[in-house]
Image (cartoon, rainbow, N blue to C red; front, top):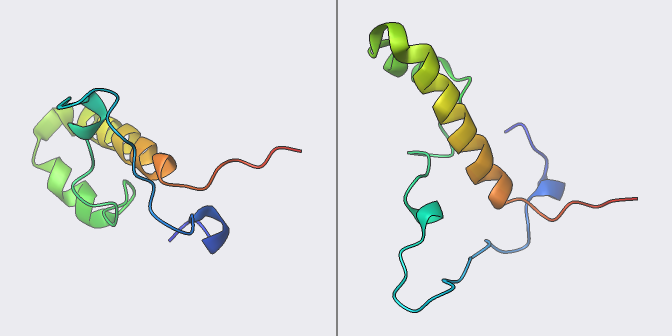
Length: 79
C-alpha cells in the first residue's frame, strides 16, 4: 500500500444516484481490482500482450485506477 491509514475513511464511500433508476457513467468504468496497482509487474506483463499500444493501455489504466482510489479516500485537509 502506498497510502497510510489517515487516507482511509472510517467507512466506505457510497455515492447515491441523482435520478431514480439512473445508470451513471462513473459506475461503468473502474479498475479490475484496486489491488492491481498500475506499477505492478503483473499488470505490466498482462498489458504487454496488447503489443505496441500497451503503453497507451497502461496510461489509461493508471488514470482509471488513480481516479477510483482517490474517490474512496478521506476528504482533503487544507490549512
